[in-house]
Length: 215
Image 1: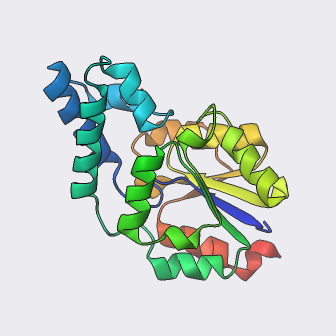
Image 2 (image 1 turned 120 degrees about the horizontal axis):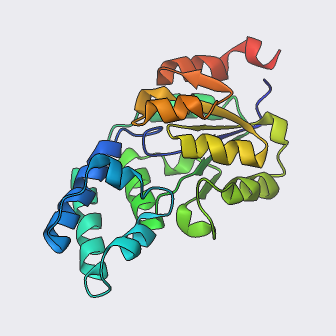
C-alpha cells in the first residue's frame, strides 16, 4: 500500500492512558454524583469530546467544577512516555508526506497530551472532537483531513484502538488499521474488520517503513 497520509487516533494508539481516563472519570462521578460507574459504563459514553460527555452526565450546576477538576487531575497524572518515541514518529514523518491526528478528545485534553509527550510539532493537521459537528464514529473529521490536504483516499490510512475508529475510517472510504497494543475492547475492534491489524507499535513501524509496502 502506497501511503500519502497516516491518521492517528490518540488514546490507546499514541499513548497508554485509556484506563487512566476511565479511572479519573469514575472518581469525578463518585465525588459529584455519589454513584459508581463501571468501566463499560464509561466506555459506552465515548465518541464525543470529554467536555460534551460531561454536559451529558453532570447537572448544569456542577459541570464546570467537575470538568476543571478532571482536567487538573489529567494533567497531574499524565505520562510523558507514549507508545512511540518522538524519534520513531520523526522517522515515520520522514517517509510519509503527512502525519495527522483525528481524536474524539477535547481540545483541552489533546493539548495536555501533546504537551506531555512533546510531539505537537510532528503532526501536519490535528482535529479533535471539538473541531467537528459529529465526532466518531462519524467520518466528518476524516473528510476534512482529506479535503484540507488534498489526499488520495486509497493512500490514506487511519490507525486506532477502537471499533469507532474503524467504523469512521470505513465510512470515509479509507484504509483502516487496528492498534491492538492499546485496545480495551479488543473483540469489538477485531469484529469491526480493519484492513490491517498490528500487535505492537514496532510491528506498525516496520510496516510503514517497509520498502515492500509501496511496491
